[in-house]
Image (cartoon, rainbow, N blue to C red; front, side):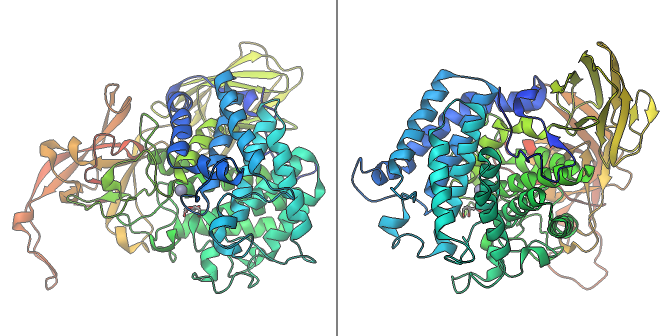
Amino acid sequence: MARGGPAQPTDQARSVYRPLSPGEVKITGGLWATRAERNRAAAIPSGLKQLGEAKNLFNLELAAGRTSGQPVGPIFADSDVYKWLEAAAWEYGRKADERLLADIDGVVELIAAAQEEDGYLNSMVPTRDGGRYVDLPQHHEFYCYGHLIQAAVATARTTDRRQLLEVAMKIADHLVATFGEDKRHDVDGHPVIEMALVELYRETGTAAYLELARYFVEARGRGLIEGYGFQPAYFSDRVPVREQTTVEGHAVRAVYLGAGATDVAAELDDQELLAALEAQFAAMVDEKEYLTGGLGSRWEGEAFGDPYELPPDRAYAETCAAIGGIQWAWRLLLATGKSSYADQIERMLYNGFLAGVSLPGTEYFYVNPLQHRDHALADTQRSVQNGRLGWFDCACCPPNVMRTFASLEGYIASTDAGGVQIHQYVPGLIDSGDLRLRVETDYPWHGRIKIIIEQASATATKISFRIPAWAEDATVDGAVVEAGGYATVERTWQADDQLVLELPLRPRLTAPDPRVDAVRGCLAIERGPLVYALEKTDQPGGVAPDDLAITADAGFAEREQSDLLDGIVVVTAQGKVIDRATEQPGSRPHPRPAPATRDTELVAIPYYAWCNRGPQAMRVWIPTA
Ligand code: FUB
Ligand code: ZN
């Protein structure tokens, strides 16, 4: 059984909740079990093949002196191997599989052979780009280390193997000896080393790793990264972390830094830093997050835009950014116990993250816009007009998706001295102390969640349920509970006791913040945790979503369609088709004459499922009629 999940605070850490380890949570059915199984059976094996074809493994062979040639791919190509390894390790923890372990062993052995005597490890930089640590902002050396260390911690928690952990410790010792206030005073351009070092500290007890993570957090924003082609904001290096009030620059960098800094704050019980990180996360949610939980609105620099700069059609919303957002939110949830962070995890998981992967699980979106137009041009590899792809020249997202599916159990529930908290609703088993719960639900299609006590508790124990902020009129055993918090029932539980939580999953209309100019006058459809989208193929007459409008009272209806897109609930609403032939093109004197319209039914599917029937027009935000 796994000895811990992807973030495992020590007993000394400020941690209102403690994670259950993946072995204590099992997802036994429903949407996430299906998708995780495809990740295991199809995506992870295909990922290893892709790492071979894209030459990431060849690069490490080169570094190990086993072949000759020049390394191929982006400067951070090694990190894709490490993310894949992390996915494979978590997956092995979910389900022991000798073939997978043999694959893990083979890749680990190669990595160990590529490591230099003093701990340095990188297959690209020394031979191709001028030597070690000559360009920390761009060369991603610590970024690669960070992903390796995360993979090593995963192998240590899920297998009996120690070789990768030894490689990771050798790297960390080398970093400790080389960088710091009284050594080389420097930081990497791409955070992730912070999270990784804290986890390595948690795994090994070596305080120097935590201290180095603290140093990397504190050294940021103090002018160390200058003159490297991008502005300091791109690297989250404009303002010291504890003085920052928002997120800015490259989105994945910003949220990985937020997650790592939260780990540091939790371990050191640094409440000032934690408060700053909470404020940054709140600003991100209020001003810079898409409805889907997508993060980063600018293609240029893969970056957060200014507040309320959230164009739906040009949304970048990189799949990796949603994953980093989930990691950050989970750490804030553990540290503070606030349900709003679990709400955010739900939003990001079901929408921004899940849209990043095809239903079969082996194709990926890099960017995740909320609107895609008819006749769009596939002008870059990342354009969604290409459909989801099996791999990318810059393949950060695919193995990131794999490791997220493989460690999903780590985000479901937690524990504290009083009992167990259920944050996400999936059919499954939860073991917490002497209590064993079975969760039966068909969420997110139905809102009924039944908890059955399979193993009694010896003393009075609390079971807490997250009541999402959208869940007005939710009930526990028939009694209405408040939305946006936890509903708690305390008892000395007997086997076969039951609790029933009902979350109202009726479709609802959502209005955007009025400062988001790009979608002013539009509404979106949501149902439970799912954001819905209009896709062209579903509309009566195949009308393009851009020629549709929604009527103010929507008149929702829903139907279950088990034969569509793996089985979904389709939501229909009353709308209008705009007769563009009666519309005068271009800008016109106000007031414009209104075009002719006719009634229609709008047919909406969950956003995550879009583009599984070929690339086509889609929109989330719908103009009002
Ligand atoms: O720079 C490494 C990774 O590549 C980033 O996290 C992604 O955004 C992509 O640029
Ligand atoms: Zn990515």
